[in-house]
Image: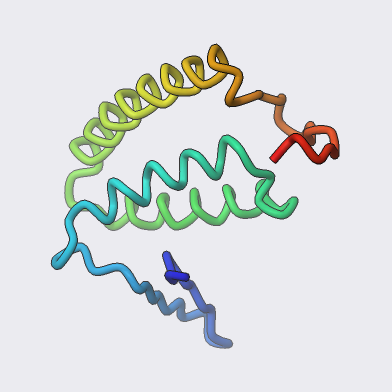
Length: 118
């Protein structure tokens, strides 16, 4: 098990961050993390706390953008990258659905509890 991101808030409001990832040693770790996050976000219910998790992720992103030197460049790059990743992901999911290897459910809808739904 890897610690992707640990964020601890201390009594004085100070946040401290920790991770087991080292992008200097393994630059592909972030790409792998992105793909794994997409699969998890699209295929699991994250223990029922997805609304709070997304809110926290977005809060961290807003804080990062607030102190960014050139917000527009970062946002444009993220927009382009996420669009490409989204297109690839949707194509892959469609291919898996056509092969009968994946099923999709709307947000908030859990798959039926069945032994063959693994």
